[in-house]
Length: 303
Image (tube, rainbow, N blue to C red; front, side, top):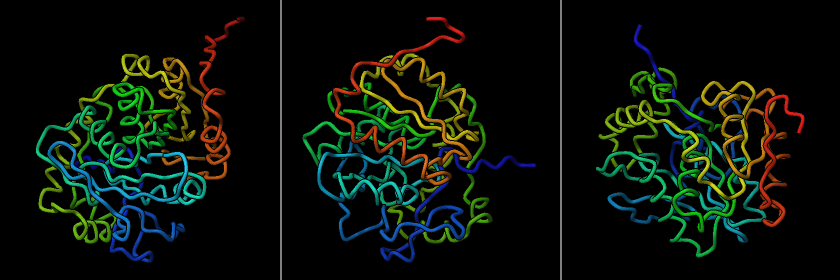
């Protein structure tokens, strides 16, 4: 039987027109979503050029800037609607669709995390001169790590959801649009309407999976991140198993950890109450309260 890879690094994909009742994410079912069509709100949407692609973004609220980076594969901003709804009451929330997702172009250069970091930097600079907080989910969290490693002055703190150490070959399946259409046909139909290059969508999926199959993430990048990081993982996450997030926690110089019970990869949807109780204090805390580093305790250590 052909192996079907359904989506790495996300549970959701926003699709539809710019009306709130059309907004949904991949396999959302009857779960409620936000009334704001994040990722396709043309009333506020803008573009910035990043290397060879135009990247789509939206800005909501006022205050200290927070960049939201959604999951990959079938991910998009609307999957994090509850989180954005909450944050925009107190912060300036920058919501971008990453390269090859939603209304953002694909470009023609090879996929790399340096490229993803530079895309994010272009959006940040288009909106603010201040260092940003980043909340990243899965692929978005790995992008956040790379931004912090490459451009430490631009990142104040990170909330990383579902992103631990990673060995090459862990994501070795495929992402076939025909297979996805059997699971959620509205996803295919509506996404084609908002993508600037729908004819290249399967090409992007193929390149994306090749990119992820080769990807490894370990101490080299984690040890380079100096800003405070809150690691969040669902206890049933099979994309970023808890043990891999624990490994990342030990490698990061300044990190905190939240394991969300009864939650899968998208812990913010699986158990929003616990997620919010961990993330909001971390986001709101004065930076000097988070900057002292974190104590790492070895297994069964007496110290």
